[in-house]
Length: 150
Image 1 (cartoon, rainbow, N blue to C red):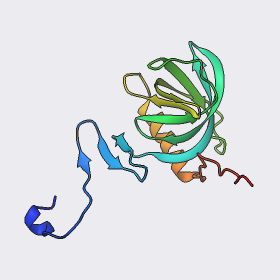
Image 2 (image 1 turned 45 degrees about the vertical axis):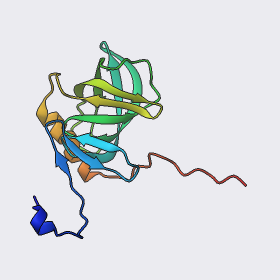
Image 3 (image 1 turned 90 degrees about the vertical axis):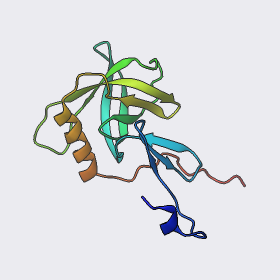
Image 4 (image 1 turned 180 degrees about the vertical axis):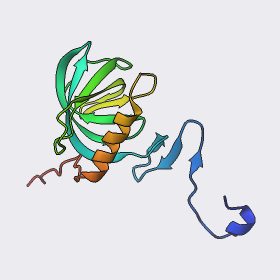
């Protein structure tokens, strides 16, 4: 932490506030992000289950210890609804599928934001997923370039 005496009178500096809600980080667009853990970008296909039945396919686009963003066109889900996510690491010898439970906390035309808080999950599975995404990082293009109109 910088004291006012150390900062000087003409020095401009950025600050980052940490609260019990999370880290507030002002992004270029002026939006405030509230995160308790760092996101890891990547791509990994999955199935979305609702009430034990597979209902959609999707692709993990980023993950943290707290949750995921899933690119999908599936919209028949409510906020706070519990879903199960099934995935497999494609390049490993292990062919077993892994499952995580999550609550839907955000819906958009690009996909679903889900949170692991408040549901029973194996922390090893979450850590394995984050490590796999880190080691198999591929650039993620959330907003494809639009062609300029002539």
